[in-house]
Each structure stands twice: as structure tokens, then as C-alpha cells.
Amino acid sequence: MVDKITVNEQSSIRIDGEKTLYFDPLHIADEPHDADIVFITHEHFDHFSPQDIAKVANGNTLYVVPKSMAAALKNAGLQSEKCILVTPGDKIEPLSVAVEVVEAYNISKAFHPKANGWVGYVVNVCGGRVYVCGDTDDTPEARAVKCDIVCVPIGGTYTMDAKQAAEFVNALAPKAAIPIHYGTIVGSAAAADEFEKLVNAPVVRKIKF
Image 1 (tube, rainbow, N blue to C red):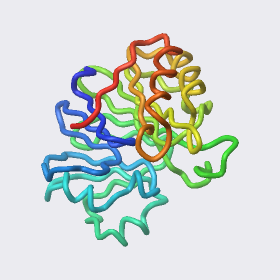
Image 2 (tube, one colour):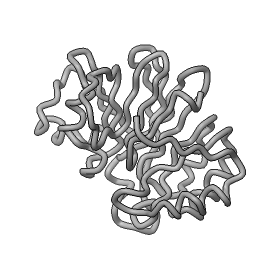
Image 3 (cartoon, rainbow, N blue to C red):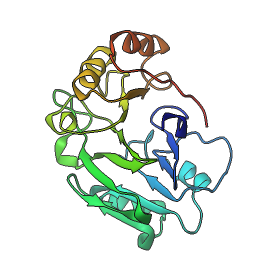
């Protein structure tokens, strides 16, 4: 299942399963227009990039987006009938892909308030569960997730740092962990080295799709 997941940069993730899924597309070099579903975790510029969404989307693409981003979607000109607005705790099945919506927020920082209703996603693909955390700290809601693979932010400043992310992953006990949200805007490559040393599960670094 890990071989179906690639990371472009930041939290820009592609999963090639039964459907082609993108999460927070950013700095997309080509224009594949192959997305069945685009998932957006929140509206910060490095996660909600309308110009990059346009590169992966086509006329049939569905968008799964936090309900709190309704105004941002309208301003970006995305088709409202193609948008599925979600709140934490929702369970949906767009195009027969089972999705669980998980709260993503900071505990001791002000960048991602819980009140904003921003999210991460658990998707059931290729016979397993992949948890794309979004920008979050180690929260009770995140720890309650059951998953086979976790894509976890490690860059610090706005999210967990490498040590905190490793502690979180070890508590989650997935089959594999993929570090994200480092190496571009915040967090160095050394953060991934530290994370890998501290994590019990196999760590996979897959860069560029």
C-alpha cells in the first residue's frame, strides 16, 4: 500500500488507489488533470492553492473541504456542486471511497485553532487505512485514529516537531509512517532523520510525484 503514496512537498500528497486522490496539492510541476478527489485540510496558502488544484482537477473532480472554508471556495471559483463540505467527525463515501474526518488543531500554539474546524482525513484505500493528519499537534482526537499508514507533520513551529511526531506515531502504532510538512517552508531534512531514528514503525520518505 505504501507504494501507492507519494509526497510532492509540504503536505502535498497523491494516492494512486482505486481512485486518484490528492491532498493539499502544492507546487505541482505538470498538469495531469487526473484527480478523482481533491482533499483540502485547511485554508493556509501552503495547503489551499487554487492554482495547483486547477492543475490536478478535471470536470469530474470532487472536492472534500472543511465547511469553514465555504467562503474561500467561493472566492476561488470552485464548483459548488462538486464540493463536499465536512466537519470533524463526519464519515462520507465519495466515489465509494470511505473517508473519516478528524479534527486537526494546535494545543499550545495559535496557528490552527480548534474552533476553525480544520481537519485531517482517514481514507480507506488498497485494503488499508491511510491517515493524512493535516496541520495538527498530538491531540486526543488524533491519537484515537486507527490506521495502517500515517502521513504526519514533523516540521515544528506550526505543527509537531520530529520528536513530538515520533512519540505520536509510536502511540498510534501504524505499519508505516510518512513524514510530511518539512523541508520546504519549515523544518529541515535533518528533522526527517531525527524522526526516523525515534519511530518504531518503518519510515518511508517518498518525494515528488
